[in-house]
Length: 247
Image 1 (cartoon, rainbow, N blue to C red):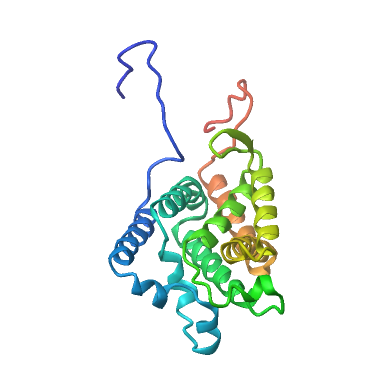
Image 2: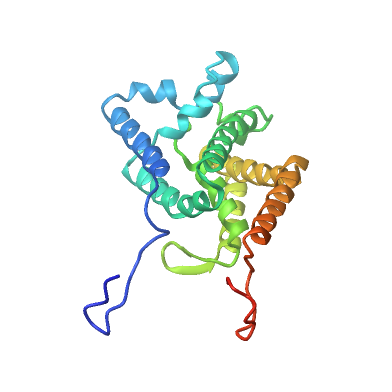
């Protein structure tokens, strides 16, 4: 291990840590599709989410492909930054398989809810039917919700200026998405954002309440305790506990 060159030197890190192979693949796929649509705009109409095409022409693939399209450089930069900032830590907690499952379920679910939202008999909903919805924001909002549930008091800088707890941050953006979705001017994207929050919550709530998940947790806990006893491993103790060989 190398010592700092100066006694006053200190380490500095930005963000949640290194980008995993999974995140690299997701970011690369979004970047590639962004470049493709930059030079071939016709692809957006085919792969973007148009609710009326899903409902009447059964272009069901759009509820998944819309996640990889973005409307501008700032759109993709901020979405990919959020994917890294919030997704990296969640992937370390969940593992790659569960993380990918959550990401695609929330993204696709948000798209499906947007299609259902467009069928409501209100003007602010029906104007979504012929709109083209693009972006990974549905899945990103699902990640934000999960992050707030796991780290409710972790500070998030709103507009990169105001530090507020993650749970408050998600409550604010959830309220904004809800009320904005009721507006004819901004209902398209915000309906998808709100859908991501709803699907993310239902997914995590359902996983927590599922009896199989509880059984797996109990079995894993029993297995860990059995290995500890086998190798005489203890969780820790006081400094004068000489019998505690491993801490």
